[in-house]
Structure formats: C-alpha cells, structure tokens
Amino acid sequence: MASFAYKALDGGGSVVTGELTAGDRGEALRQLGRKGLQPVKLTQDSKGAAPAAKAKKGDSAPAAAAKKEKNDEPIPEGPVKLKRAEVVLFTEELSDMLAAGLQLEPALRAMENRGELGSLKVVSTKIRTLVRDGNSFSSALRRVSPSFGSLYCSLAAAGEASGALDTILDRQAHYLKTIQALQGKVILALIYPAFLVVAGISVAFVFMTQLIPQLTALIESTPGGKLPAGAKFLMLFTGFISKWWVVILLVIVAGLILFKAWKDNEANQPTWDRQKLQIPLVGRAFMSRFYVQFLETMANLTANGLPLLRSLELTRDATPNLFLQSHLDDMVEQVGDGRSLSRSMNKSGIFSPLLIDMVSVGEQTGKIDQALRKASVRFDKELDNSLQRIMALIMPAILLVMALLIGSMAYLMMTAIFQTMQNLGGK
Image (cartoon, rainbow, N blue to C red; front, side, top):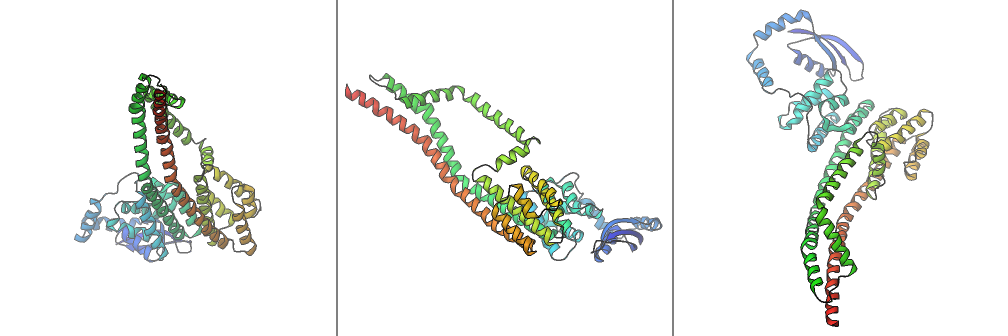
C-alpha cells in the first residue's frame, strides 16, 4: 500500500487537502470520487515509493491482466475528430449523468468504461485526465477535439460558471439534434429539386448545342427563312457559351476561391456575418436562431445566480456571429455602466421591440430569468416557422427557374418555326 497526498475540491468548491492510503494511483482517485471530492493534485509520498515498486515486481494475476488490457489499448495522441452524431451522443450521455447527481469526473469515467461508445471512450479518457489535472471542462474540450467547436466550448464554460452544466448540455444536445434533423430534411427535400436542376441543365445543353444550331441552319437555308430577334440573341449566346465554356468555368471557380478566401479572412468576417443576416428569408432564420440562443443562455445563467454582467459576457463569448458579437460588446459596456438589460438591448439596435418589452417586464417584476425563458420559447417557434417557410419555397423556386429556362428556349424555337412557315406560305 502507498500513501498519497491530495488536494481536491469538495461539493461546495472549497479546497480540501489530506492524505490517504491506496494500492495505486487509480484506487486513490476512486477513493476521492467516493468521498465526493474532485482531485486537483495527487502525489505519492516518497515513503511509499519503495513498497509500490516492490508491488510492481510481484503484481498479482488480476492486476497484471488489468495492466495488460490497458496497455493493449493505447490512447491515441493528438486531437480526436468526431462525427456530429457522436458529439450529440456524448452531450446527451454526459448531461443525463450530471443531471442524475454524478460529478463531472465520475461521469466521464463511467463513459470511459463503456466499450460500445467507440471514439467517445477515447475522448472521455482524455477529457477526464485533463479535468483531474485541474483544467476546466471547457478548456479540456478545446484541447481534446476540434469537433466540439467554439460555440459548444463557450456554452460549456458558461455552464461551469453558473453551475448548470447539465442543463446547458441538455439544451445543446437538443440544438445539435435539431440542426442534424434539419440537415436531413434539407437533403431529402433537395433530392427531387437537384434531379430537376440536372435534368434542366442537360435539356438546355442539348437545346443549345444540338437542336438550336440545326434549326438555325435549316431556317437560314430555306427561302424566305428569317430568325426572329430572340432566336438570334439565343444563337449568339449559345455560340459564346460553346466557344468560351472553359474560360467561363475557370472564372467561376476562381471567383468562388477568391470569395472563400475573402470570407475566411479574419478582418472580413464581421462584414460577411452582417451580410448573412440580410439574405431574404435565411437572414431572418439566422436572427431567430440568435435570439433563441441569447435568451436560453441568459436565462440559464441568471437563474443559477450569476450576475447579469457576467452572464452577458459569457453569452457574448458563446455567440459565433462576429457582427452580433460586436453589438453585445457595446451591451456589456452599457450594463457595466449601470444601464438595465432592456435599455442596453434597445440601444444596440439588433433586438425586436417585442423581445425588449418582454425583458423589460421581467426586470420590473424581478423575474428576468422566467421572462427570458418564455421569450426563448416564443422565438423558438418563430424559428421553426421560418425554417418551414424556407423549405416550402425551395421546390416552387427551382421549378419556376427551370420552367423559365426551358420554356424560353422552346418558345423561341417554336416562334422561329412558325415565322418561317408563314414566310413560305406567303410566297
């Protein structure tokens, strides 16, 4: 048996120091977990080093088997990439365990011992190791896997600060599942429109490269045959496309590359984030999503006792849109100067009057967290309505574009044919 000196945090967040006796470091950590302590530092006393070394030479069969099993599954180095479904599963599992009363490290250890979790087992092991060494959960997430993203990590930091990590993780799991379901719906809804687009482009290509040139040659070789102005323009356009299609394709690809480089430039990100909010229909959905995230995060933080200013700072850090984040910076300064939340929201210019009124009522009644949560439910419904409108308009829009494209070419061809027949009939 070896003696270990520990420094840990109890349930109230106070620092506790002491010593305990255990067979190895793992058993010492388990003892601390059973006491409800979260270890910050655990060191083995030098007096217990020799017995520990002796025990290593004469390990019992079960201990040797356990060590062999552990060595058979080395922890991979570097960040671990996760699929979106794995991130959702990790969030749901951890949220359920924390809500059941487990502390963070025992919850991660329970996930680590579940073999069916696959890559999540490795992620849980790495995160638990970092948390046990004194790192915060949010910083451990950033270091272990880039798949969690800055928004996820910022919300985790907000949950740690407010003591509502299980609630915020549960809401984040709901948000991730909503996004996943939305992407699935979008993919399913776009299968038929994509087929129509491909078919329309194919028909247009056949029209421009085969039918229209043949029809033009036939009409021009016919006595009295004359192309209408629309058909002549279409022929010029067809000839230009046929001759310069490679150059046009290269220009489009170069334009997309330049746009992506401009968009990814840190200096241009606020401008792009502002432009996204001005896109018809889609921009409104972005704003509704921002309202819901802002309201949910603020409601959770204020309900768990955090000061309004600190809650607003954490909510700002959890906002991915840099344009909106700059407005939240101004709100942080105003609230820090003593203004109310509703007045700072009104001065920022990014919140709707209805939302400001709901927050103002919550301030007057002293139940701002409840007012924020009710407002989040209302704007969540508005977000769902916006997404449904977008999905409902995708199909008619694509059908209209295809109808105009194919119909215009067919109309010009038929007009040329009828005009030629009239000219021949007149003679």
